[in-house]
Length: 99
Image (tube, rainbow, N blue to C red; front, side, top):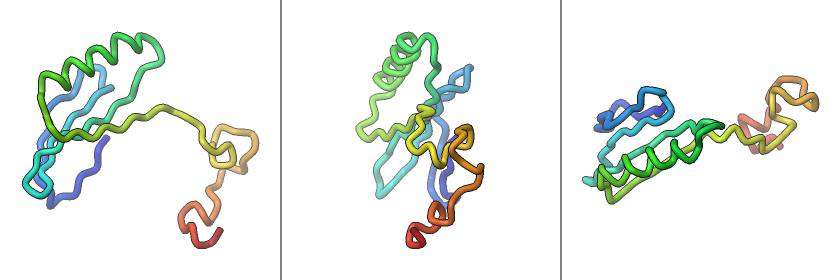
């Protein structure tokens, strides 16, 4: 999923059938930027990244921004599946000045 401000010019360029790759072109200061959101599978990673690379090369964008959901746990205190948490976000998560 990509959230793009309504006032920005945007158009979908590509979405794969497995819903693991989404590519959207936005225009920023008269430049086209390709936004890519990926959710990489845990199996068949090599095949996935070959397909992704091939598609990126086909499109020939000069400006690309890519984000990935890697399911990494950076802070076990905030991980809702961890036994170390009470399943609530701390106040400083929403307002860092409260830390």
